[in-house]
Picture (tube, rainbow, N blue to C red):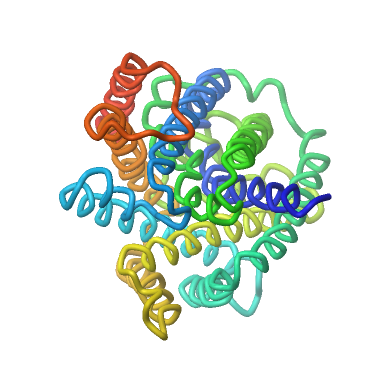
Amino acid sequence: MTKTESKTLGAVLLIAGTAIGAGMLSIPIATGASGLIASITLLFAIFTYMLITLFLFLEAMYYCPNPTTNLIGLCRKLSGPLSESFAWLAFLSLLYVAAAAYMIGSGSILASSIPQLQGQPLLASLLFSLFFGGIAFFKMEWLDRLNRLLIIGLVMAFLFLITSSVPHIKASNFSGGQPWLALSAIPVVVTSFTSHIILPSMRHYLDNNLQQLKKAILIGCGIPLFFYLTWEIIILGLLPYAGEYSLLSILQSQEEGLSLLIEYLNYHYQVNHFSELVALFSFFAIATSFWGVMISLKDFIEDGLELTQYQYHNLFAITLAFLPPLFMVLLFPSDFTTFLHYAGIIILLLYGVLPIYLVYRARYTLKLQSPYQFPGGKPSLVLISLLTILVFLSTWLNI
């Protein structure tokens, strides 16, 4: 394998890993009560929409020749202070909310799996954040290698889960469901297909190679879709739609959804080490996503504040990346899925609305040229705008 091919594989896994953590754990919790057909339809629809916005963002990125340019630098060049300020607010809000969600999710898993941490989810969250978040500030080459190990662990845990759970799937569990409940799951599914945050970092890592980046996007986004569909079918086949210890009771409960999912699976199926496998898989999924968030936060803060000119820029970046989500976890120890709902709203504004605006302005106002252009011209931008409005309204009305 050549160096270019190795880097492309690493970019594929980083893009996939950034998305998988949120979606794999939260999608069945959010969509399960809507039924199998509605859930799968929603997954394909949101996957297509998010892939379109990802390629629009790719076009916007390449209007800036400097491969290290992040979202702030992009807005600064293509628009001005207003969009730059919006990007600052929305991007930091998104990543801080996402980081807080992963901290809560990791704390829930570790506190239920490690005897020494039982009953101490906040301590577990802190230990997870310090260890895995600290690693996220290594050089990208080291992160690539470590991420591959986590992805291997993720895949192995997933395969063990499949072999352990498939014999227990009941066809009768696939019946039932309230399809309109899928609308309330849109923010979570949107969040689950978001790898946009790491795209500028991958452009720099792949040495500005557009063809390899496009390849990494397509494969890296396809992997989460396969995982989500498989996981959705498994969970909906294992848990009943309604009644005690069901998908509907998880959705209606005020308790933390992730821990309830593990508890309910363990209640219905006394399979050796089944809950441990779910917890292990969940841990790997959260760790890969958490790395993607922290990498993106670091690069975004360094680019936006132009910190690289200072001696201790890494220390500044670490401090600004860690403290806000830690305070959010301490002050608002909310549900994992609730945080992802709010993240979905921010994503629609940041990666649904903003790329359309930046691409339109670059193409038709500034008359700039990009080595990549999303097909369809103005009609496609109008259509994507209408889709964004429709998705946003559906999300806002059902949050």
